[in-house]
Length: 473
Image (cartoon, rainbow, N blue to C red):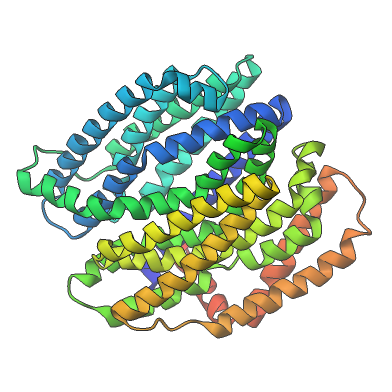
């Protein structure tokens, strides 16, 4: 990865660390102060949010694509406002008319708060797309950090004031609107009235990309949505904590993906596929860099980590291990899907995404209804594995077989196993208790990073280069 792009990805990653830590604090506070059941209500409402807001996220992707191609950015900004505004109007009316069904599913009377959250989502997604389309990936990550910090502060505050699910949703909505206003301030573009061709271009790209975005949302929320149909809200809450922990391990992958998409898009306009291959190979080096040690760590000390939230959450230990594996394989699949979209082949990503969604939904319904709540994780893992295999085959057909950095993968695997040996030896000697559990995690992370830097010349050189470019002399 070029130094400039690596630095951008590093800054974006740091912003995602802030997001992750804020999310951990929020989930921890909700779990400790309210328990699994209210957390389950909130998880189900959020699952509905991301599923019904897929059209907004599809336009979000189209805005990034068209604005990253340079030229008439203001018009595409205005076009995004028009289209997302129309989508929000339809969604608000639909949710309001379906109030009784929505509240029966979620388990709480929060339709008004949910509508407010929908509007906040539309505003935030629009401005985040504009910043990414301008290649201001660092600022795009920054407003996400601001949103997560504000959300955490507001949600914890509402909990302490005695509010439950309604406070969680209102805090979420206000945070999104706040970050959206900041995004407008940071943007270099200003919206202008779009021409018909601008609207058509956005809609045409969104026509295919919406299913790719639904695929991404389906991976994150299908299992939660299906669990809400078959199990208690408490079990949904336990599952949500396991999912949140597993998701922290793909922060690097997301940062690489967000950084490379506009670059792939720009390079594809000149058919610069050799450069795309080079950047994709560089990106793959860091895609699973934390997932492998996370998988080992979850298997060895997962129950202790979950117990930090509350003793009841230890029931999600097996789920946590399976979800970490799912995150690992999905992270690689997402890199290939992102590249397919970036080279302006959304119709291909559309078909891949359609197959993934169908399999994911079918497996979740079949396995959860037959075997129980833990099998939602198995359904997600199987679906993610299929996505990886198919997306790799598709990108190989479109631009040639990607070169995989096997040496780097081996270094990561050896480092993770070495960390596992130390962790296994320390696990039975370190006393019980939350602080000691945190100490184990810090020890394991230090061992892994030390081994990886010593084994991988590529990772070591990249880390040194990034530090030299970020830290003033």
